[in-house]
Image 1: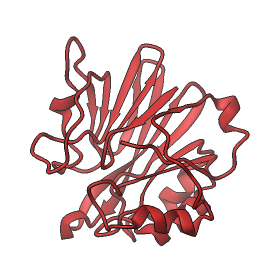
Image 2: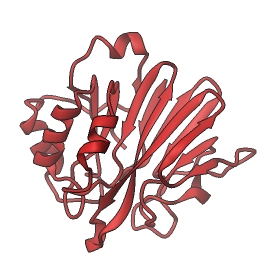
Image 3: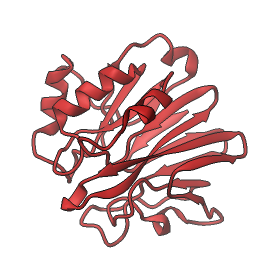
Image 4: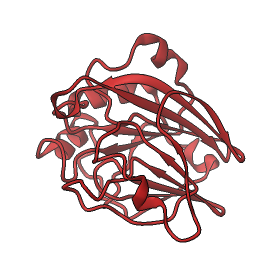
Length: 210
């Protein structure tokens, strides 16, 4: 599995011949969108910074779009969406947390989760996380301290911070890394990971450049 970051909360997850786009940036956003073909597109929050399905519809690929809570199966990929809330851009809006299971690995994507956006029932339903994508930028989503706390409670093998490049408060990444004692972490262009490798890690913070 290969994971790359494309600004904001946009990630591309590739394995075998399948590509998953998560929170792709719209052409109407102030952020520069990435353009690539995808088989599946996950949208956490209906906002121009996260809902650019048109940017990941390319070539002969037209993605299966998931934009809310529920249980889904696409090929051999299982996806569960959990309802939550965000205060992004000052509005209390629904946000979907996604648990993606593929290649025996669980990826948890929190989206634009707000400070009090997840209830205890949802928290209990999300477990055995190999890779956690967590927003850290504040301003309606989790800030660095809140992101650290929820990362500790979810106990993932790997933590990937997001929502700090072009959106969110300046200095959010430095603060988050300091909270977790990971100040020396250097950004990677991509993360190539297998379950056997993920299982050997415990709360490791990995920063992906974009």
